[in-house]
Length: 232
Image (tube, rainbow, N blue to C red; front, side):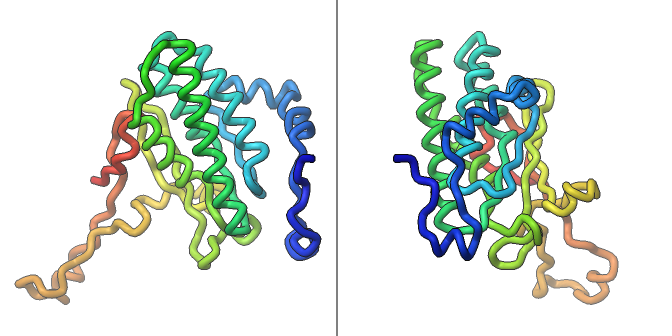
């Protein structure tokens, strides 16, 4: 029997109820949703993601679209990661978000491997697996959707994965609040601003007045190089 609740206490405390697979498929089969699924760059956001009932099924369907749009294993490597990069979720409960990440990683790895081997007769690319893991961990966040903060009170941060000509991708971070308010990106990488050396041979306080910490950003890279997470 399909699991709908974990416990009555969790239903009472958090309103946690899982959506049955049949209902998930009925909702995703709606024509207006299908048209978005068929657009690899259309994004989907699940504000109460649970263990990933909707996101896992969306991933499967988007990977089929990526398969149909690909004429080679190399192109599918790129399009599979593009499809994955458009799926976002927030989940409040820690055990659920751990399962969400695991389910997304497992689903991607299985579906990608099957398509590469069955359609293209090729070998799986470990860099695709590694890059997919980075995308999933960035796009699936533990936090409070209504308050727009993580479990430790920090702003929820999401990454945009913008395709650039030449099969490249530019990763840019936004707070969830800035996405809603359309106020632009953070302008840096979380935790990666350049620090000033307090012990350098210079007049620190004079230098402080004229020098701001240099903001950093993710380097433009190929889709299968996302796993390197290079910062410039």
